[in-house]
Length: 355
Ligand code: CP3
Image 1 (cartoon, rainbow, N blue to C red):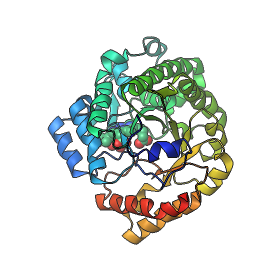
Image 2 (cartoon, rainbow, N blue to C red):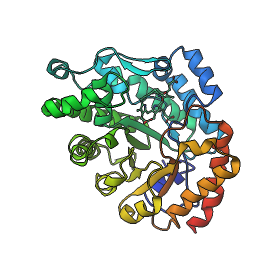
Image 3 (cartoon, helix red, strand yellow):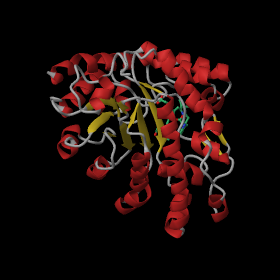
């Protein structure tokens, strides 16, 4: 059943809308005091993500505060490698850490697709709990990392500035990396399908680090696996289409390639020009983005001006499809009032672009 407010789904499917819908990457997070309170109650980020009730609570927090047009499952892209047994923890101020990074042939050999019903049951339980709590008001987005972005964290064992270990594997043992990416792609396909079967009404694939590759490597090690995933996803569920959004940070130069990967929408970071992007690919995909998250540290007038500029750049929507978003996740120090101003301006100003 379509949600009461289905503007977001219609925009992804390039159907007529009354206004431009908006949601924000990382909309549930540390910039909200109520998130920090729930996280403290949970004890750690992983305990928060693994409790369906608490994950539901933080998913709803931004949706209660702001008039957002979609909710996104509260979880993390690194749940899959954790379920593969790599031992994920989040060290305050340092980001994610894996106890057992994947470096050797032996490490790759022992990797297998996790049993989603067993080890990732907390995620599908959270999806079901959130859908109930949303009462069909707005759609729920499910998500996963891309096989390549997951591999970056799995091989490095955490965040990295230069992906030296990953790229060493890529340039010395490409067949090993392909084996790892194959396991990841199969896992992501099963994981996203399980989220869809539990109630996710659209899914986003975060390819955060695909943009660190050369063009041939991007095609071979990232895009190819994203295509494979999309071809294996449920196209519809409960009689409704389930649109797919692919977000590759820093990939404007490969926009045409990404637009043909089978996704209904492509997410863009703030370095893209939406008007030019649209003229390149709007005949086949909707576009999502692309405000610089740091605009939210500007004055109220600047925030409103920049929001209008993004909407002006996309232009009169007509048969296009535009979902307003930030060009990457919201910064943890963002003043929440700035989000309220942004949502207000996008909803107010965009109406004239949908006549
Ligand atoms: O968008 C949402 O509100 C849904 C929740 C969500 C989280 N992570 C919660 C989270 C989503 C969609 C993600 C995706 C994610 N996780 C990505 C891809 C998107 C992107 O930002 O590029 C990546 C690369 C990760 C991996 C990850 N998780 C890192 C590097 C970190 C630590 C660094 C940081 O930004 O804090 C996390 C932890 C994390 N995931 C937090 C949240 C709210 C903060 C942790 C905390 O509460 O202590």
